[in-house]
Length: 273
Image (cartoon, rainbow, N blue to C red; front, side, top):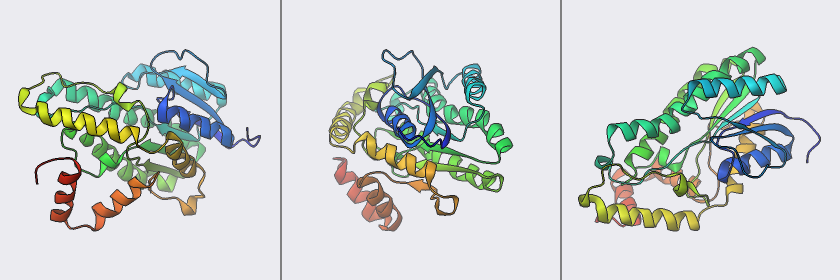
C-alpha cells in the first residue's frame, strides 16, 4: 500500500470485475477509495470501503455521495463503472427495456456526475472517469441498444469536459475492448424474442463469450483508469484505450475508409458480406 494519499476516489459497480480491479488499483496507488454495489458484498475487499448504491435511484445516489463527503470531506476522482449489457436484435427489446438499459448505462453516469460536480467545483479540481467501450465508437450488430448507450456516454463525456475544464475539472473516457469479466452475467435478455433474429443473436452471444474469454485482463483497464486519474493536467488525454485491441480499433475507425471498414466489420462478426 502506498502511504502517500492522492485523494478520495469513488468507484461505482466495484463489487467485481473491472470496478473491483479499478478500486484496488486506486487504493494501492494511495487513494482513499469508496466503492459502490447494488447489493451487500459477501466478502470485504481489502482497502476499499464498500457502500450500497443504485445508480438508477436519485435518492440512493444523493445518499452515497453525501456519505462519502461526510466520511472523507471531498471527492477527487469519480469512476463511473456500473453498467449492463444486452445482446439481441434491436427490434427484440421493448421501449421499456431500452429505457431501463439507458437508465443504468447513461443516466446512472449523469446522476452520479451531477451529484459530484458541485463538490468538485467547490474544490476547484476533480476528475470524472467514465468507463465507456469500443462500442462507443463502433457499430454493433445485435447490440444496437448497448452500443447506443456507449455512444451516448462518449458524446456526453466529451461535451461536458469542454464545459468544466476552466473549473479545474476534467471528464475522461476509458474505452476497453473485450475484457475478461462477468459482464455477460450482468447482461439482460431481450424481452420480446423473435425467431427472425435467433440465428444472429445466438452467434453474437458466442462471439461475446469467446471474446471475453480471450480478452484483456481487468488489470489493463484498471491501469488505464489509474493513468487517467494521476496523469499531470497538461498531459491528460480525453480517451484512454487499455490493452492492445482498443487502440487498434480506434485507429482503424478513424483512418480506414467507410466501405472497407464495413466489410471488415461484417467479416469479423460473421455477417454475410
